[in-house]
Length: 79
Length: 136
Image 1 (cartoon, each protein chain N blue to C red):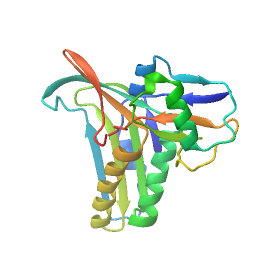
Image 2: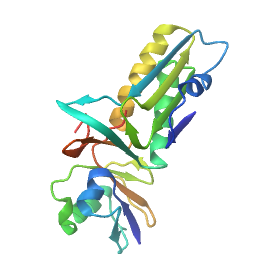
Image 3: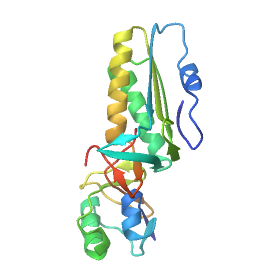
C-alpha cells in the first residue's frame, strides 16, 4: 500500500488528506505514476502540483520503490 | 534553530540562536500578517506545512546560505495554524562576519523559502477564503 499525501487546496479538492493507492507502484517512474494518478483520480484534473518522494522534491525520471512516501505539493505560499 | 512552531514566535530567541563572537553583522527578518492583500481585507490566516519535509527544506536552504553565501549562522522559524493580524509568520536570523553578506543571505533565504518550502497559506476574508501562492 503506497501512501499519497495531499495538502492545502488539493486536500480540500479531494476531501481527504491521503489517497488510497493499493497496487504496488513498481516498476515505474515518478512521471509514470503521475500520469496514472491523474487518469485514476478525476478530482485532480487540471490541478498543478509537484511530487515529493520520501519528503524530497522528485523529478519525473526518478524511480519509485515499494513503501515510498509520495506527496502532491501544490504551489507553495510560505512566508 | 530550524523549526515549525504552532506557538507565537519569540524573535529574541531566534536572534539568540545566531549568537557568536566572529560574526559582526546580524540581520533579522520578520514576516507579519498584513491586513491588506490583493485589494481585500484579511481577517486571519491559516498556515499548513508538510511536517518533516518542511524542516528538511528549511535546513537545505540554511545549508545553501552557509556554503554559497557565507552565512555563518542561520536560524529559521515558521508558524503553523491560525494567525491573527500582526502576528509573526516567519522569522529568519542570519549572522555573518560583515553586514553585506548578512543582508544578502537573509534576503535570499526568504525568497527561497517562499518558492521551495512546502508551506501553504490560506487567507480568510469577510466573505470567503483562498489559498495563496506567489509563484503559481
